[in-house]
Image (cartoon, rainbow, N blue to C red; front, side, top):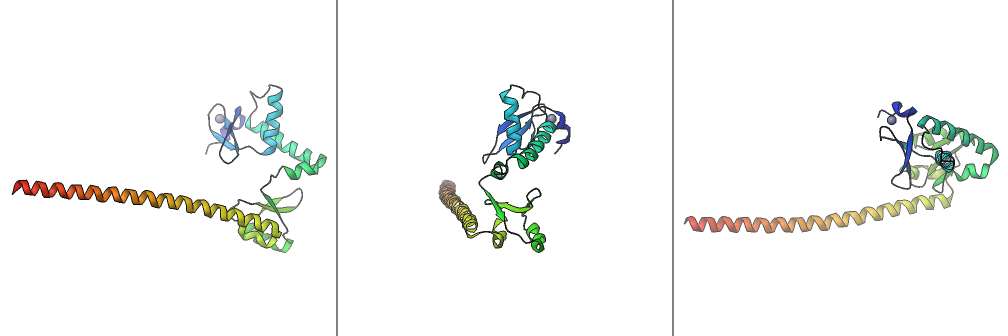
Length: 186
Ligand SMILES: [Zn+2]
């Protein structure tokens, strides 16, 4: 991806999948990144003042970093809230940090905590550092995923069967035509 050229281009926001908002380059119409909570806040402030037309990628990233730093000092509650409902804070002892890292735990340097998300594909590997409540959340998420996978498997199974019925019908027709054709010849 050639995102570097877009750093100084103006942006616009676009609703993406899974509740994400995408930052897009207005000039190249290219996807840049998912907007973080802080980037959204910065953009909203510009939007309110009707000054959002020329904000660049670089600007929004930098100002979001500043806002994040300010929030850390001014408002610890919202700093934590900004990680969202899906965050799981992990109780990783210092000596286990390499293993946690290997299992894709994320490091929050300001509060010096490891974390992951309920829907992170590797979350199940991190359960030894979770509370029972968080383990339940992860398992519930996995069950939901499996449930969806099974629904899709069932649908595909039914479609395959329909398709194979159509195919055998077509085969029967084809062989009947061959029989007719041969009879005509005879
Ligand atoms: Zn661009």
